Length: 413
Image 1: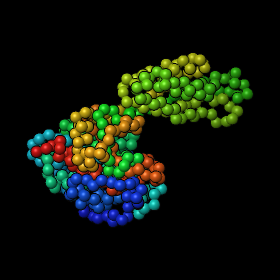
Image 2: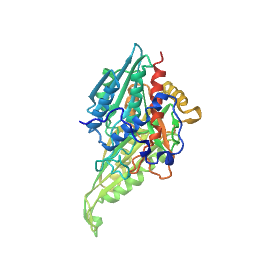
Image 3: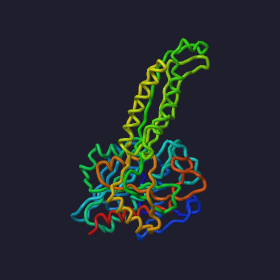
Image 4: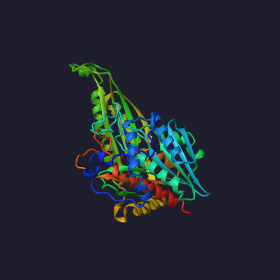
């Protein structure tokens, strides 16, 4: 494989208007990281050109492993959780801290026009994972050279964040047994926040994301004689409306939860009542208590509607990512570090969002914090998962500086 050199330079002038469209940014405090800016741009663009979907990040993982070895990382292990990569930096006896970046892309056709646009049809880094990789690579190179900590830094390049639970796959593959850490940190770029600002808070900052399918079975027939049928369409419509009352009429207003029916499939002809219809959707919540309440009420409501409409309703409820919950000491440390990087006025409270993130699995096992890093306030409206999403390369040194400083602070000499 023809690997780009880790020292390869990018022409910063090729950036797709990030500075203009994303607004002002703040210079980081790690000057050596700032000097790596063009390298991080080059790494990010190389990864952006060749995006790979969940658990198919073979080229990306190989590149990451090769760069880590070139930087002088003490130990590099591939294939953790199928396509994950772990790098280990050691500097004397002490505690261990984990730093994580996600690696997978999305099944989206890129619509940006730039010379480093995706070369693969219907695959795109539309969530900024390419930028996250570049930031952690920048931090890895700096820490490998400086050894400005006492203990161990575990660099976690995780596959399959986008709905495939790559974090859980790494954990199930023995990540923390093989590479034990006392705490773990990660960050995600966030469009709509001023470039270079941070948001971090203790507690639940992203929601659980469960999904469900409801199969409604009736008895079909001629649409002109509906009295001879047991109409699953009408029953399904009643279910859609009734399910919307669960959050508004059962959950306390102080508990945030969302139930959305997003699919309704059934029927093939205008004059035929079908035998079955299928509904599907998602449930989002921050507390286990809220999730259990929604699930229990769904089952009860569907049983009642099935009896009322003389049909059967089968609920297939699937638990997804758990809530992402930052631990208080680590969130406080992250806030102090972010303030040192960007300035105290550029660190804000982390508004809980109904997105989900499989970093939650790491936080179930280890204390830690997950931050948002402002990607810029853009007027084009193309946010995460848009085919015209644009990662702001000016924030690369800021994210890398945070990762360096949080490791150094947690592992202070």
